[in-house]
Length: 83
Image 1 (tube, rainbow, N blue to C red):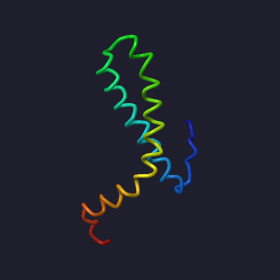
Image 2: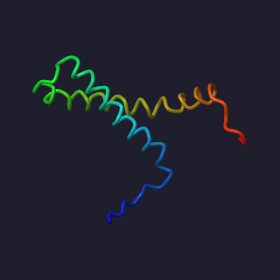
Image 3: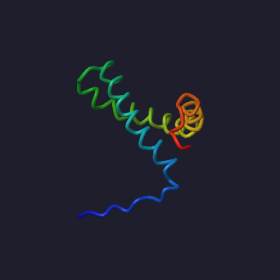
């Protein structure tokens, strides 16, 4: 059995936007690159660069805007009972 050592909980505010930005930019860049180039060999050559650039923008953007998003969500959504 493989044992994976977990990061301490204090890293969660960085790990969550890191993983979210990887997944979201991968999906969006696949869709936009396929839409513009189609399923061609050019897609396979173009997509990694498109994804990389979009991730380089998305990750720092998420780090900056996530506190604002949390405040907006707290304003729009009722707190759970007992809080």
